[in-house]
Length: 390
Image (cartoon, rainbow, N blue to C red; front, side):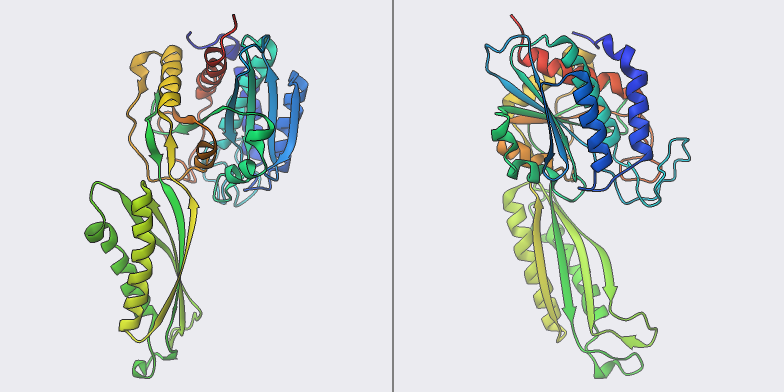
């Protein structure tokens, strides 16, 4: 089944919704306006049940097919939060809130799933139940984890679950997917280095934490170059280096380092935590300082289940043609909290082409509205082909 014609008719109205969401970005769990719009649309279009407040501000809509003999329930998930970024697109529908921006396309993800929900409410040409899930706080807040902890899977009896993300650099009308580990675990590290403060003119009287911390930053890079198996990827990035003093002539007593660790296997994740603590503590000790490491295991590796990956790839091929679906898409060290939902239920996650333009999390990024019909068609076909009516 190719692109569904109905989405050519609703493309304009869905674009209006998408651009309105883009103008009014909301961060993490503070998605009240977005959630209200979603719930209102789902009720207006005739969802059998609409529940709000799951995972704090998440929204779930239930759509029953014309038949229910199969007893099957499939969940479709879109994220809806923005990022703390100053937009630099210059678009007429650019963010109206300085310092907040839909720089990852969650506005587009929301619009595509809303479009599919509208169509499924109108047609109901399937045997089973579709559950549309709108999740807050993908960008660092773990909204997927919170929705699972709130009992969403059990409450709506979700048996399989699917997710989708736009991907700049891939042409509109193309998809990319792979089985197994796809997105990396995204962990957070904080290293507090304590030495002895002194006057900058008399370094011999102190233990210089800036020098100690600098050595720690460099030494951490040996984890990927000299400890890790080169075939088991790891990225250790120190992204913040802060001292307690801003003076030009003071050696600070404390330095705080912050960063992120990305891995694609549990073994490498364990190695990373152990090695970061060993390197930081022993490097500091060598200089007469102390280092305290806080390692926060945040998002796990996002692992696509084999059967559901094959099914989602086949559906994508039916929508855009086999030549437009990459089934061995390159892994990414980016994190994705859909991983929590895939730990709770079998499912898969696919990338949808967004065309040329800035990459996600960039101030000049913009979701490509031309991708809306393609994404809507994939979602609708997941339901219709996954639960075919007799």
